[in-house]
Image (cartoon, rainbow, N blue to C red; front, side, top):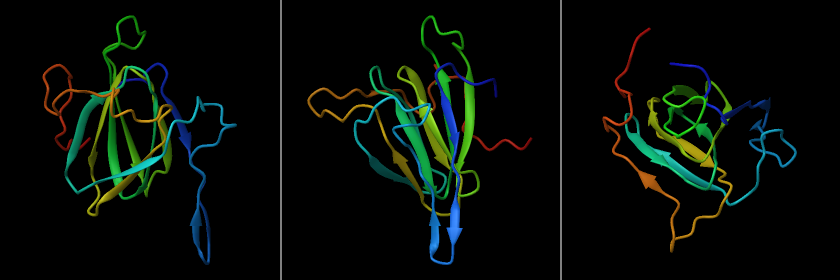
Length: 154
């Protein structure tokens, strides 16, 4: 995969374990990459399932996989972007605790690569509006996006 897509922010998360369990902060209003708060929601993905592709024209997404592992893939198809055409992969979850901000206009999706259901938390910059959803979808296997969800051994 290529270099980072313009506007993407990746924050390593510090996990603090003790005898009671573990704690980690996902997103703070004083983080360098914080834009604004819209809402918080959690979604799950079953092993081997691909949830892709979609983008937003207005909101940024801030994704963190809090259980399991997902391969989060981004594609920059934005007109005028210095990274137009770039595809990146981010392996996030139990073994690599990261928060990834996906800017508006960037296609994104993920595949659950763990043996158990993955739990993904999103903190988008805008609240969901059912009257006018900021959701634009492309099929997971669209030829518009140069990416294969197959497992690749490097």
